[in-house]
Each structure stands twice: as structure tokens, then as C-alpha cells.
Amino acid sequence: DTIQQSVFNRILSGQADSLRGYQIATDQVAGRYPLIERAKDTETEVQGSVYELSGEDLLLADAYEGNAYKRIKVQLHSGKDAWVYIRNS
Image 1 (tube, rainbow, N blue to C red):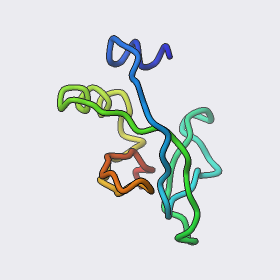
Image 2: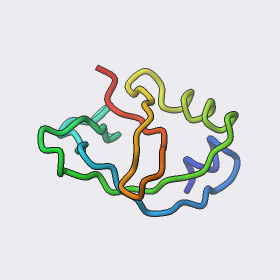
Image 3: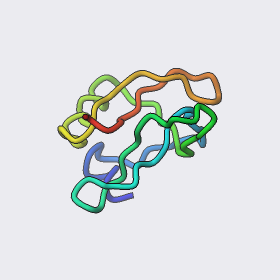
Image 4: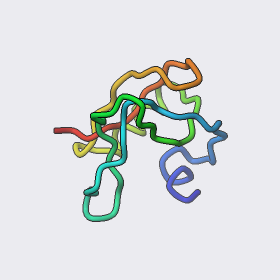
């Protein structure tokens, strides 16, 4: 993935997982980049991948994501704790 290569200088290895209680927003950042937001239905899930990052990697991801997103700690469907970027509103 070219974004991972440019942000982290490598391709990350991830595992499929999901986040319950969130949904993909209907609008996008710059009409192109998806946003995740809290869903009204707590059973709604967002499917994605979870990656293991170092503290330095996380700072690089923060810089890449910018002000349109905020990073919060969540528990994924698998039970893993993870950081996820959601709509910054």
C-alpha cells in the first residue's frame, strides 16, 4: 500500500477485526477519505484491519491523519484494545 509505505516506510501486516457501535459516515473528508462515527445502533459494526505500531509509528499516523480525525482508545470485537481514528467534531 503506497500510503503505508510513505507514512511508515514499510508495508504493515494486519489482522481482520471489527469495531462494534460505530459506522462509516455518509460524508467524507475532502470528498474522498472515509470517516468513522458512533452509531445509534450499538450492534452496527465497522470491518477493518488492526495493526501493531510502535509509539513512534503512532505519532507518524497522528501527523498523517491531521485535524479531521481524533484518536480514541476502543475495544475491538476480538477483545483487543486499540486506537482508532474517528470523526473529529
